[in-house]
View 1 (cartoon, rainbow, N blue to C red):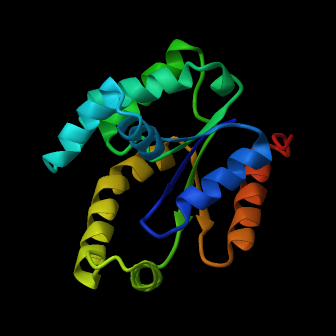
View 2: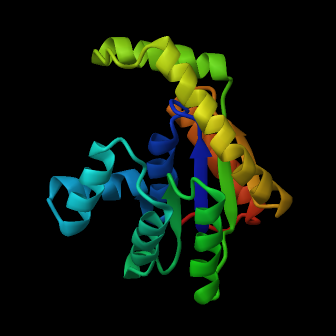
Length: 195
């Protein structure tokens, strides 16, 4: 299974990605985790990423695309993967298509966690309060939601037009949402998949 998961901040995407990956026996590949690990380990890539982020810039598409292509070429991703946090732009979407096509592969499904934006804002404000994140105020959170919506709409439209989009209600407990995701994927894949 070659999957991609998308969801607004606070939708539980990272948590669900790990659960789905475990269920189907495929690696969950998070670009954020790759960047953080490289920064933590002070690799050449990590130093490059740290400098870019330190300037307040986004990591350029080409660099992110190369990192993902290298990760997908690793043996554990040969039988499938779940991408989390990539692609974020139409340029990255095209690069992912090219990378997969070069190996005669394509995505099987794109999961989208759908949660009411006001519920997500309340969830993120609550999390900020618990974790003492002073920078996560309502204005900042609303701005992040707006950016996510405007950035991902073209991607969701593209995958929807290609018949790959699987929207799943992301409201409920981790277990409830996880069960919905697995049921939707199993239905799409004709019951195949679970190891």
